[in-house]
Length: 250
Ligand SMILES: NC(=O)c1ccc[n+]([C@@H]2O[C@H](COP(=O)([O-])OP(=O)(O)OC[C@H]3O[C@@H](n4cnc5c(N)ncnc54)[C@H](OP(=O)(O)O)[C@@H]3O)[C@@H](O)[C@H]2O)c1
Image (cartoon, protein in one colour):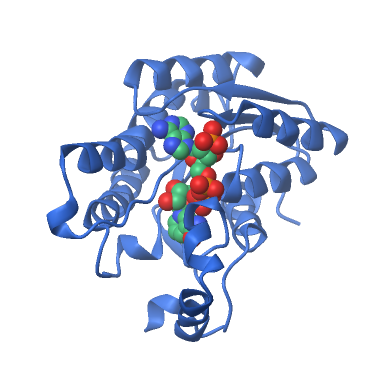
C-alpha cells in the first residue's frame, strides 16, 4: 500500500531495534536497504540476510556517527552503492537518563553528538545523493520526549527537541526536492530501554501511562516510517508524527 518499491534507502541504526524493523519493512515493500551500524556488525549482517531473503538488495555500512568524518564517509559510501538515495532514516541514537547533577561533559557530549549532531551530519552528507532522486525523503527519529518533558535525561530531551526543529528547518530548506519529516515514538521495547521493560514495576507504569495500554514494538513504528517515505506521502513535509500509544496526550 505505501509504495517504496525500487527505492534505495539508508537506515542509520539499522542493526537493532526500531531501525532494524524499519529496514525490514522497507525491504518487504521492495526497497533496497543500506543497513548502517556502529559496532554490531553481525546483527547488521543478519538484517541484510533477512532483507535479501525478501528479494531486495541490501548491504551493511559501519560508522560511529559521533565522528563527523566517519559519518560523511559512510553516507558517501551508501550513496555511491546505487548512485543515489531515495530515502534516509536516521534511527541511530542513544538514551541516557542522568539527573542534572549527574551530567558531566562526557554524558552531555555523547548524547548530543549521537542524537543531534549525528542526525545533522548524516542528512547533510546524504543531501547530494537525495537530490538525484525524484521521490527523495528523509525521516528523522525523535521521541515523545522531544516535546513532552520528563524528569531525568535532560540532554536526551534537548537533543530530541532540537531534532524536531532541525526537521522543520530542513523541510523548508530542502523543499521542493527533498521532503523531511520526523517520527516521535513513545516507549518501545528495544535494547535501549531493556532495563525499563524488564523491571515489572516500570513496565506496568509505562503501560498504565499509555492510553492504548501497552508498550510499543518496533513493528508499530516501521510502517509509519514507510508511509512517510512513500509516494502516498508526496505532499507531506515538516511534520513530527507521534507514534506513541497516545502517551503524549497525558
Ligand atoms: N526504544 C524507545 O522506546 C524509543 C523511544 C523514542 C525514541 N527512540 C529513538 O529511536 C531510535 C532507535 O532507538 P532503539 O530503541 O531502536 O535503540 P537501540 O535498539 O538501542 O539501537 C540503537 C541503534 O543506534 C546505533 N547507534 C548507537 N550509537 C551510535 C553511534 N554513535 N553511531 C552510530 N550508530 C549508533 C546502534 O548501532 P549498534 O547496533 O552497532 O550499536 C543501533 O543500531 C533512537 O533515535 C531513539 O532515541 C526510541
